[in-house]
Image (tube, rainbow, N blue to C red; front, side, top):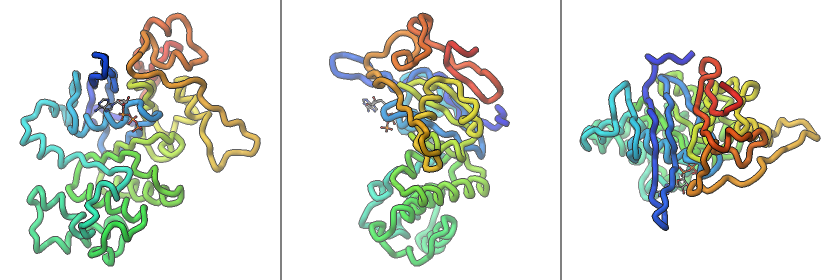
Length: 319
Ligand SMILES: Nc1ncnc2c1ncn2[C@@H]1O[C@H](COP(=O)(O)OP(=O)(O)OP(=O)(O)O)[C@@H](O)[C@H]1O
């Protein structure tokens, strides 16, 4: 299903560290390797603070890794000259959780939609209206919104504008950072259906960051599960419910609250607190919350190993 020749973006052993008070070092991303495939969705899931945003900021060149490489079609994009980096950014666009915060409230929708194209001098002023109408049509919004302001639209409509604006530059990779988390469940569903439709039409790769494994498994082709700066499991989306093996992925699945859940079904929470990324222990990052933790887990960090095609896990119980 996933072929090396279809890799658009590749992270190779990337690490991101920040300096913290008391001369400490905070490792937000620890030795992460993963692939983003053409026309496919990679879901990145994990609790708050596990390093999801830090990881995608590096993937889209907003931040440089402390070490490791990021390749776009095999070419190193970390060490590009600044000018080339800027041009390359057109190819990777982002949709944020709260479009109201990322849009200029004084700008009309026509200007919000066409600003990226104007900035890169890819659109003439005289063509703005035509292009903006086309972009609104692409996200199934009426042309009536053209001269309105973002605050007069609903959250779902604004998120459609955010998607249209991000896709205006025809990127190969679209990164959605909790892009549907602030929306009602029914609106969330329509936005995801729109993303899936646009992905099929345009063959774009989507990186979808989310803390909700139930949502992401419904449409992601592969899911990377993060815990404390580590990727602990990479699994095809359709297999996550039945084949996930990592105790953390299983804990996330069992703590799901689903509206389809049967009555009397037990909701289990994950025992214990996430340790601070400043005090990372030797061995497995999940050891303090894992009911299978053995002596090897306390001393040796498990490597992410393939356990079947397209499925990798970092756990001493497997591989
Ligand atoms: N610029 C920074 N300087 C210092 N520490 C940072 C910086 N950016 C992130 N961190 C730390 O790195 C860790 C990972 O943060 P990150 O925002 O990537 O997590 P996240 O999984 O995206 O969380 P959330 O879902 O809450 O956004 C956190 O401990 C955070 O405090």
